Image (cartoon, rainbow, N blue to C red; front, side, top):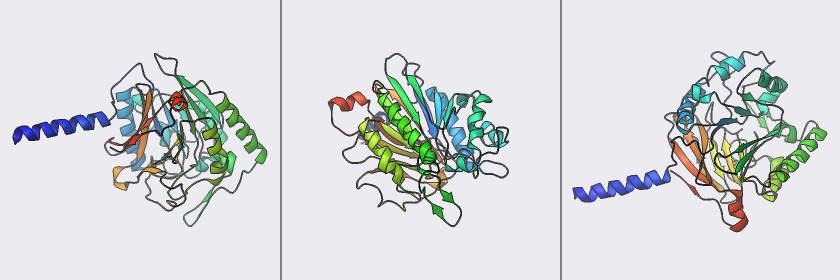
Length: 345
């Protein structure tokens, strides 16, 4: 009996190890971290327990995988952004919290609704003061070549507030975007997005990132203008994934028959358990939902391994991997019409 149990345990451990992506350093791959809605609080100590926990666990994983950069998906400073480029929130909420050596890597930043309540131009200007804060304009493209290959990853960082308008949030009511404040600026960005996607035809991976979700089952739910205008572009240009925040939990959605993966990564400063809009997303599109308030927030990391991107959700309590999805290269879908596989750990 003991021998039989040993065999069973051994086989189970092998299965777990096969399902779990490696977190060892590989200098011939591209690895990066992703977080959203991480911006602390506007009063002392200017950070939350979840934010501190996420920063610690991110630093551990970033060191283990030799992360090359961070994607920060908006709501960088709660509740009303910053006032100017010298605002102490840059130090109190960002520099003094995400201070580990492994996180002294480029941070590709975009703006959320709370950033637009303040001086978002000051956040762009902070790029000139910080060695790692990369926020050159409200929307921009960043490209990375996967070491040891000709494959590349294109990040198309967009500003969803300019596109759709801002929200009106308070403790009593949350009003979704009602349309762009400046329609011309919105149309300029829509044209820019399509041009960027046209220019990524040779990139193996294209990730579009914004603050507002296309699809979400949580408090804020889907963003109508993104469903109407961004989703068709993602599908037309065979984009691999859309990353966002705004809702304070972790989600993975994929529409049946579509290869576009939608990830909500908005749990870095607080977790909120809401499924208010579970009937507002396409049927059978929800692949994963996580809102464990006791686990001190959540974030994601991505590893390039064996010509695939391994996307992993982790919590802020102990950096345990809680979900794993595989993002296939675009060339995979040019020869095979199949859905990306995902596995819950």
